Length: 194
Image (cartoon, rainbow, N blue to C red):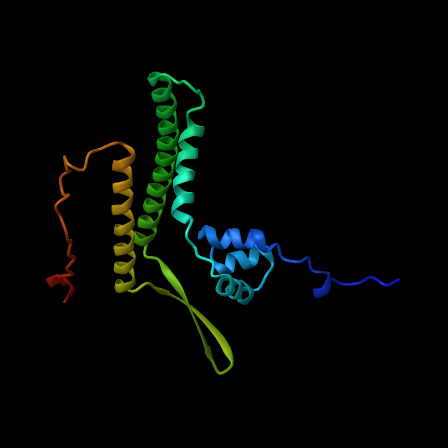
């Protein structure tokens, strides 16, 4: 007896009860439901239309998740205030430690990129001339460097905001320079370069 490949007739029948529950939950897209249940999107859309299914449970599901998270975090049924404070503060400390590690990694990457921009970076120009591939290293244009610096400044600004949040620094106090909305860079040709 020869081996048989998997055919459409061997495919298990869709579990429409589970599929309909996923549709009504309103959390997954039709594409994701299709992927998870191995059913075409058109079959799902048809089912939604013929059964008049509504995606109406997502808000209730989110609220239930929140409630369950609160319940699972406080494991002692009759926890005292100090037990709750102790457990919650431990969770916050762990989250802050992870955030600070991520922020430090981001700062290191910023410094590496700034150094790279300051070291006259180059890019590879590749062209073709009479059937020959020509490669030539060229410097990055001032406009490209300026765009990279602007993007890096945006990342740095976000990192500083995250850092202030992770350290519990109040935005009400403000910091020197917080009121700066725009920084302009002007290139001036010196008299010695003419």
